[in-house]
Image (cartoon, rainbow, N blue to C red; front, top):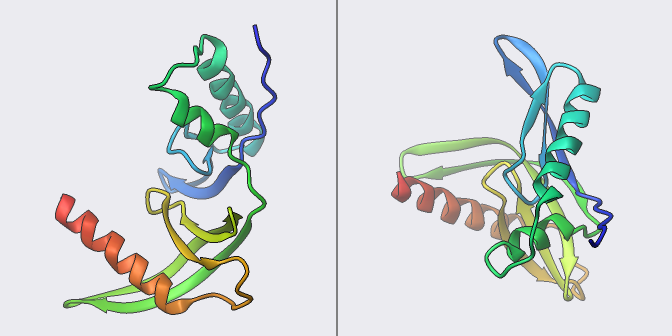
Length: 151
C-alpha cells in the first residue's frame, strides 16, 4: 500500500447556522468534503477524518483520477477579497468576491471558490501588469449568465 502525504489547500469561512457563527471547511479546489462546526478545532478534526476516510479504500482508476489531482494540486496562492459592482441587464451585482490567484505553466489563473470554483486565465505570468478589472467583470458576467441559464 502506498502512503500519500496530502497537503490539501483548505477554504475556511465563517457561516451562520441557526443564527450562530460556525466555521466551514472544504478543499479549496473541490466542493467536498465540507464540514461545519461551531468550534474550529472540531471542524478541523472532522475534516481531516473525512479526507482520510475518502482515501482509505481509494483505488486509482481513470474515473477518479481527476479528483485525486485536485486534492494534490497545491500551488502558491495569493488570496484577496475584491469588490465588484456592475449591471447585468436590469440586475445590479454588487459585493465582495474572494479571489485565489496562482500561476500554472506561465499563466496567471484566478479562481473564485465561492462561485463553484470558477476559474479564468488572467494573462501571462511574464506580463508584469496588475489585476485586470475588465477580465474579472467579464468572467463574472459569463459565469452568472451560465448559472442563470442552468436554472
